[in-house]
Length: 131
Image (cartoon, rainbow, N blue to C red):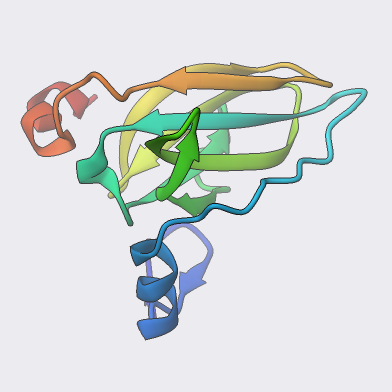
């Protein structure tokens, strides 16, 4: 187990690694409506297995996380992190405790999408990610 210094710990054992290593053909079921929405982050293949954290704007120390998984969209591989059950508002996405995207808008009753699939790998962006 390890801690990111923001109020939760993770147990990254073999089962989690295997979870991200396989393709995920199953459908994603999202419970959205009223002021609850979801966010799909599209990334490059190099991000497969990377843990992406999310926090409401102004609440940087209260984060949850999802791994980037390989899924299929229109018969082609897609590398996404799917965040569900998000209250309408703006959010910050984090990778390795560095803000990856700020002011990401989530609308209640809808699925918002952020496409970072055409951007360079995060290591290439490292100087740009620092606030």
